[in-house]
Length: 154
Image 1 (cartoon, rainbow, N blue to C red):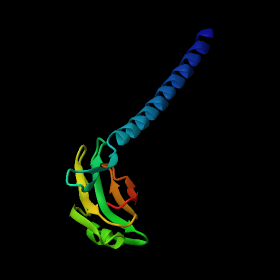
Image 2 (cartoon, rainbow, N blue to C red):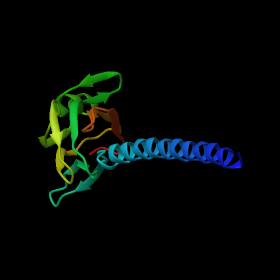
Image 3 (cartoon, one colour):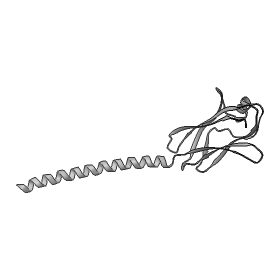
């Protein structure tokens, strides 16, 4: 009789161990999926520098490990929005000289890739501009980021 009692106890403990292993496996798979999504997320880095000709360069670099699929980019000057740097900076200060500019629409920025958004100099007024971008990662998760330039003219 005692042998049957231990047999039921053994089967219950085996079921508890199997159920625990299943729960841990499901948790581990979910953690791995989260890690995979984070590991291929793009990370945008905005930089400002000056070249030897005195132009201020505004660049955007993808420092993440996954591509950034841009949907749009727009320049905000006050409460107005512009797709083109030239129009927006002319409104902010008509004395600014623009050497080159890039407007973002549908665009992919690969890991480690840099895009030069604008090269400008001059101006007489303090300006307040914001450049906003909307993009997705490889999994379709949407993000927004922005760069704000406040203060001295270019």
